[in-house]
Image (tube, rainbow, N blue to C red; front, top):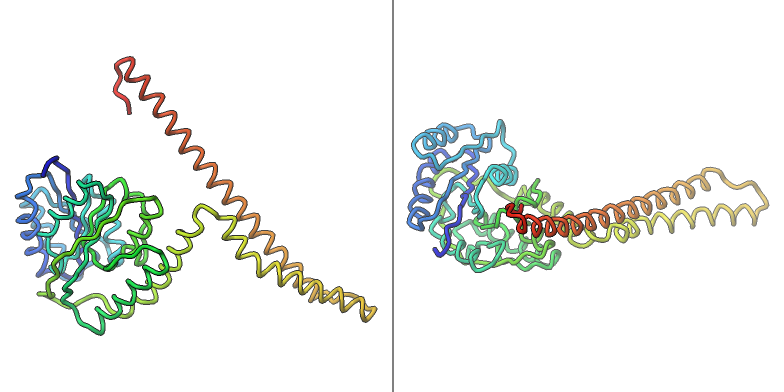
Length: 325
């Protein structure tokens, strides 16, 4: 390695008492020869077996291990988010705790980070999983994610990824969002690379994932599409939402007034009232979009002003011998 980089390897565990010891040994044997400072953040996602006890025992013998404990099972994304929050490295590597990811691939990920990439994604090109329950849904999901987000990643579901801490710590994670990190990071203009990685068959225990997560992935995909398309244009998004209500309100009010004039009778209050409700809802949505536009533009202006202020303070500090922030 050319330049020492402090590395954090983040591994969530859920009922992996037989895997945590071999995983620790594999990480140490893969990273220690690189001669860079590193830590391991082991996140116990509410395990019911001896996973936590073995993690604590390992931490007593290896000071490079930090253990994060959940009171109950919150899921892989929440565990990864906690590990990312507590990690102190400049480069963060995430991986599964079931020994299917190989820590020996970390060296190649660090090379890509040194080459200037911000996010490096693993690609399990010879995946050792069941065809129907894992491989086929994964192929469909990767194709769908690429079409919706415009970010073509061969294997979004691979947990073996590397990030610059300055990038990943600013990306909110919840539900099943960990698989959409490349798409979310692309909004900020980050450089993304893919690396072929080894994939091993599960040695201990049973898989915690299956077809039951599909609906969560689809819902999260809708959220990502909305963020990617309208994050900088909230007025457009709220305007599109308000358009059907506006059309419905004008149609209902027009019908009520036309019927009243043609039959020379009083306007139907229920029908007219429905039209007013539709139009009011459309107006509220438009006002919300305008407010969102204002907040976005003000925050953008503040970032530019802060950057200019930091530059001025930095130049002044250098001139009088004070270290710039």
